[in-house]
Image 1: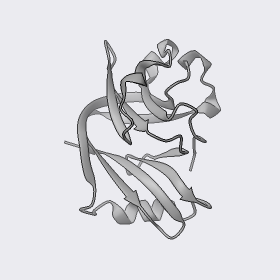
Image 2: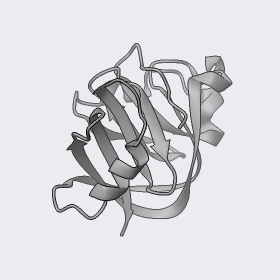
Image 3: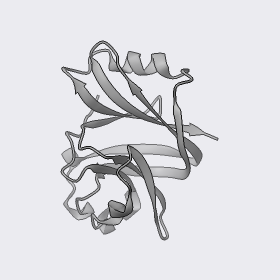
Image 4: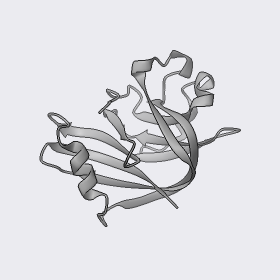
Length: 152
């Protein structure tokens, strides 16, 4: 599992890949300190933000779920733990968002032109409207925030 090792600015952004070089690092400044939010970029649509704390983050493509490491020793067994909660009724609806295409998950406060290969995770999202849902899980190895995209 590929992890981004935390953010200095408290937020990650799922930046549209075509917009990356133009990303100036202030677009997510309007986001409240919630775990998940969104901003709108003119001509580039909606941008998902994850934050509130500078926690390491990974993306599980098959589950379309972002995982943020709250407290644990390692991520062994994490993918299985996420799979086990996919049908849980504990997921909390956050909002709806329209996404589609190639994205770059990055520290929202870093200029796109300065983002290196190790500073980002490539994410492909099929075009559509999604419900964003959040869940905090406590598997045996630790504690994780989850945010998933559910096609609607």
